Length: 265
Ligand SMILES: *[C@@H]1O[C@H](CO)[C@@H](O)[C@H](O)[C@H]1NC(C)=O
Ligand SMILES: *[C@@H]1O[C@H](CO)[C@@H](O)[C@H](O)[C@H]1NC(C)=O
Ligand SMILES: *[C@@H]1O[C@H](CO)[C@@H](O)[C@H](O)[C@H]1NC(C)=O
View 1 (cartoon, rainbow, N blue to C red):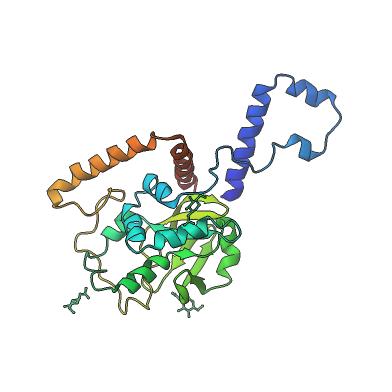
View 2: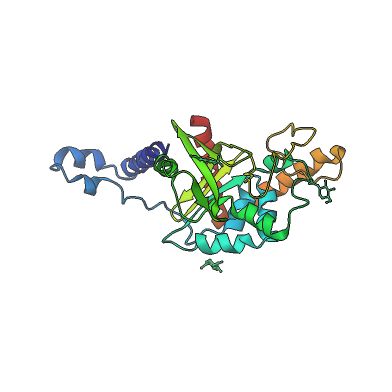
């Protein structure tokens, strides 16, 4: 996948180079063969990459990841993750469940957790180091992999021909999309909440009526009847904020390319 994106990017850059320089073809024909480094576009430099990635901004425009973002804020884990995202040496890899993943669990699932347990649960959704998807094959040979929640809170990663799964005790979600992956920050979308055995002694029951729609905005609507208008509104205001700022535009581009990856997968 990464190779494909890289070659797509390279192809796009070459196309731009050809279009913007009419003499390119002639020059290429007449000049002696130059070393490849001179022909290739000035390597990785993706044009509008922000100096640092603001996780709250990223998660509020991509997704819908509103439920996870609320837990990040409520537990103060957002700041822990953000300082790691600011750390260009190590970085962070986050597995972010969609809102529908939380909605699929009973609303009481987290009700009896202590503050510390809830914090560990959220910390469990990240590794304290950046990994591109291409690195998961190597990473899976290190199973079980320790998470941000501590060395006893581990995950098992499997890479089956590019189909990557993140196994916790009670769930084994697939990475369904790469939302953002530029060193030092990787954010991968997963379709289930990660449920470690240290917190859940038994398999938490699913909600009685499984979520019919994958991408509804959230499950906190007051009644079933108010769900549709509420999520439509949320979607509307979100797409308005998509267009709000230039810095946000780059995240949207990344989110869109994540979607493209999904289609091509
Ligand atoms: C991360 O870096 C940004 C920009 O330098 C800064 O504003 C922010 O406070 C930092 N956050 C943390 C948690 O270190
Ligand atoms: C939460 O705790 C209460 C009281 O201890 C108990 O009755 C209830 O079954 C627990 N709920 C869950 C989801 O474990
Ligand atoms: C991960 O794999 C190890 C064995 O390789 C196993 O002991 C452990 O229970 C697994 N953990 C999970 C969360 O599946």
